[in-house]
Image 1 (cartoon, rainbow over the protein chains, first blue to last red):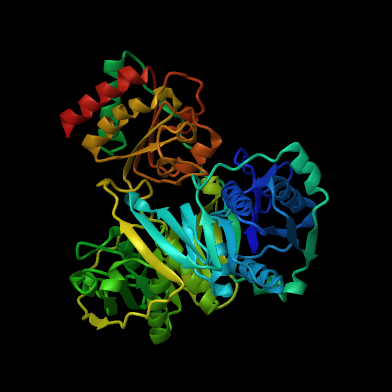
Image 2: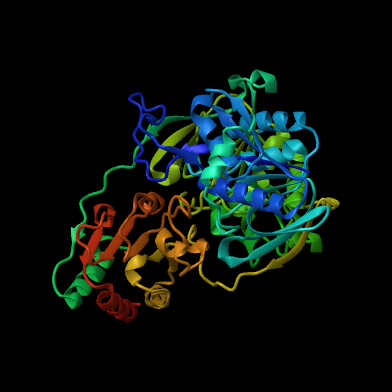
Length: 258
Length: 318
């Protein structure tokens, strides 16, 4: 049984975003790159599935410049993925073009049962590639999944949406699952895991191999801006009774929000 | 005339505010507006003519009342095929993000979620946050494909709907369910409160609350303002509250009118998620806490003393 996990490398959440001098992107010098946190839940889910079922092969897939994103694949393999696929490119692709490239490499590999991804990448926050990929592969999906149950030919996935409503779907395999926080607790890569990962295969493709070029991109981010500076915080002094009086007065009369 | 399709969400025979925001973007901009909504009451939306909606597709069959991503996708696809809109608008929430990426892929349309500013003139001018609000960018469309735009709730000012055209209500045939995706159950949440992403007032708590039970103080403060309670990542990771309450880069990005940060020091990930709030009140015992650099009003003090007094005071004016 074959399983794919789609991962993306993103700037660590601690990153202070700085803009390039032409404001057409962010400055990536000095950025610490990590696996998108939601993708870690996807990797963990795939590895747990492998541990609980026999004859499962887990393949991590990513797209990006090799020199940088190779580390993300090594981490996924150190956690327990068997091998990796890398689409090696510097191109800046939109969600749909990325999904088309991923679909091509997955189709080349033949039959599979499950595709996992994080519910969203914390850099672009577009939250679209996995479902676009599911559409191109013509498989059903469940997104923002908090729990799963597997049977022979199906997965039942539950998700919680706004207002605490719980939705449960049963999908026939092959299917796409996008992971929310809480689906599991991702493991850390062990030292032996890290050693083993170095020997696991990474198969490399170019965008050309996928029949994709940067010109197919329909959407670009331009003219980046940092949030405007806020006026200095008005500190409210005094005893707590006076502070509360003053705060409520300011919220009513100055901010006009109460 | 250019044509636009708006996917509407409804509540008790009314269009939800977040969907009215989509109609507002289009109002008076010279588009022929078509809408669709499914489920109970989707045929009873009397207000649509005021918004200049020419045609409204609905379905109230039992199957349309039980959400299924595959069926909703197919239903909207049939509207797209009938109408060929060049612009499609929906809300950027767990429903919109569950359906429209697939429709973009199916039709080879341009797609953007989480849009916070949108102007329709010669071109479609769109802005959105990136890195959970650490910066914003303009969205540039590089070809003339139809566009799917998901609007983040609470960001677009409502237009004054004063059109008086006729809306033609059209029943849509519900698609045949696929055997691949079946809805097992939909369990309505008990919460009467608005979701964090839609709330106008949020009261968030962090590690300064010392233990899970003390979140009661925040619920008490939230009550008279009809606010929604949120939390920092630290206390979600401690298991005090569920992840659905987390505000920040690995939780929800919020932009209420009023945000209370109680006992939250203000890690960069948290600040990113809430910096779109209009007025921010920080209550923290540590005067050096980074939260004070983003706050509008700050109180350095013991939250266990300040918050109950604040609750009483707000109750007295409400």
